[in-house]
Length: 268
Length: 263
Image 1 (tube, rainbow over the protein chains, first blue to last red):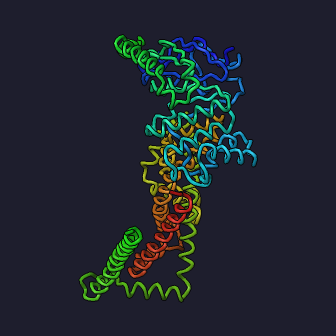
Image 2 (tube, one colour; image 1 turned 30 degrees about the horizontal axis):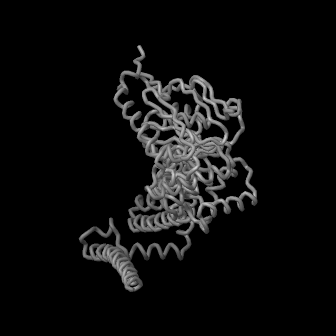
Image 3 (cartoon, rainbow over the protein chains, first blue to last red; image 1 turned 90 degrees about the vertical axis):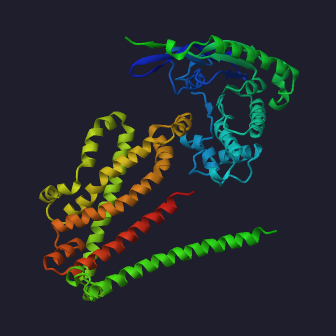
């Protein structure tokens, strides 16, 4: 039973003199509670795809359905996490976390208690009245995660949320996010260019090629790896095998890839 | 542990540095007035034209006791603060409108550029004709001289706000107004404060020039009057008062900055 469906989605970028097809005929579906990773080189349009799933960007062609409903009219909550925390520096951590409910005018004191509890759950105690600049990068990204989760999104979109962190913090956060998503039974789409991250966190990996962005291959992550936490999954023998396979496919892609100019059709 | 000791030494160093800077600042001030006084008494400069500190301060004192000076100060201060506030607030409001309506900003662009480049003081005579030779023209002068530059600077600051902040808000279905209120405006506050600082100076220019042109009262009037009756002590006295008032106004803006922007 598919929950999120993309059907023949294409997208174009326009400049004054030419247009570029950035995404070509993307179709895939995500089941409820599934964790899917979109893996690909930078510039393959994976972030654009995420923007479209979030409903902020309309696909030029094709359609995106959630629960069989068009994304624009669906009032399902979608959580979006960006490459950096983007906590508002002039707001305290608690105000940052509660910005979603505040904007939707659904702020209650219960929600505040819940936010504090969630913050404590991710190891952020006694920081509620601090400002983001007083926190480390990892702590800030954790606060940003809670900001996304507090609105109880049905689908979580993660746009390389760990890419700006140091390796140790990144691993810890991967484990945390993976645990939280399992605990709260969320559906998630992760965009990343890190093969290891894709394998260790997700149930399925969609490998993309660029110019124009298209689906190159889809891998099912072995069950043994899915059930492990990202940290332990990295040590599993099957991890190495899948890594090598994806690496080889990416490498081959690089050799067959066409230069950008050929795909940027001149408008005459 | 050497920590506390080194920290105390560091604090000592900071204090000492502050003291040295303050000593220099005071020395320059005193030297300036001392040199002015001496130069005037020894006729290195013409005391009739450049007056002297002793005369300036006794003139200020005399007029204060007499009660005529306070009225002039009040009027000029009132006009300047009003011109400053209206100019700044109107500039921020116009910038917000430009930000809200993208096409409007594109349409207005050449007009803003022309109006910004134009010497606003040249509009003085037209203002007097339109608004009459009174407060209104002078306040309008203080307003007109700061409004366009405020608009341009604040609008530029609005546009430089990191789009990802807006993306975060839009993922929560924020409206355009909510995006403005929660992200664009607070992120632009430092730029807004720095235009406030520029506008303090500009509104003084506008008001003093306005008083040159029309008024029968105020510090600008005193300067022109002193010039006409060849009383340069009066001109210098007004200048000293303006310098002090402008500095106080600037410091007030700085205090507001400290209150609004937490680092």
